[in-house]
Length: 434
Image (tube, rainbow, N blue to C red):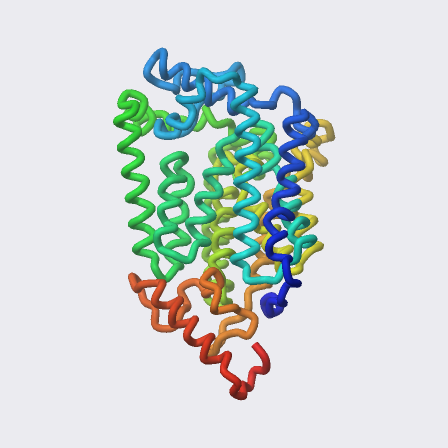
């Protein structure tokens, strides 16, 4: 299958309206949350943000945030450096902090989605941009994160930018995300498939190490506890068999496997799936950085023993990327499945229907990866006409001619730009118009 059609020029003035068009649905979702009409359960409103702030108060009183727990046994599960975000807010009324948090998530979602559209190289008008933004804004990684006051969207955005960015320094975003939450270190798997892999890894590990040391300076007692005990206490996150666990081990536990066996089988299946993707997609198709960011982020959601809907920002951006590539039916269906309260409904139906509802989101991630692979052009000895090599975001992963491990990626981009300039000269080309 071929990739997306060549970009079409937008009407004059459309580019100035695109940011507003993308931001509009995020503003609507933020308003619904602040108004109390997001559709979320009442007890979950501000729930996670309350944990963060109460943990900060506990730090002031006891020197550690890890002794606070709610009546459900949930507490602060992030590295101590993440606490620095909430210490200045601990004495501010919860409602005020939550309102600002909702607006911040809305701004984050609009910026990341606008960046995805821009870096895709596709010509997307204001109406289509608004629809693409809608596909992201109403999904749980944005809307439910607003309702809960979650930190996850910021961590997910950092990991996504680390992999989708065209410069090696973007690896620093993975370092920032990993300092706040360990899972963005999985970006290293994606870095291994990028031409400037070593520089990205150095940036990621350097920033992670620097911020982690800062955490030790800020809270030595809490840091020692977290890195020796708290990191391995998965019970503070939730049970693998929890009804709303979105991961593959969670799905297997819902189907009846014991938690330990579900983790082993889930990790084994995801390892096999990753190998198959590498052999039959990466080695045979021109995989762009945006696709890689979606695939790695989606894999993290599936392989993590306990993951919730608000962890899946990469999945939501994957549906947006399908829409940008004009695969609208699949994009809409996928976004809807990540917007409806499926896990709430699962508690109100018989066992057979419960498992069906709980399986929709994990299985939809597999379908997303397959659908994205179908939009990537096949590899060939010459450049594919549907790949815009003037756009660094679309330079195929680890396939740039002459680029070897450790080479400067910017040099590769300049080389492809020079090739695109040469192709633009009025000479005959057997492949037709580019």
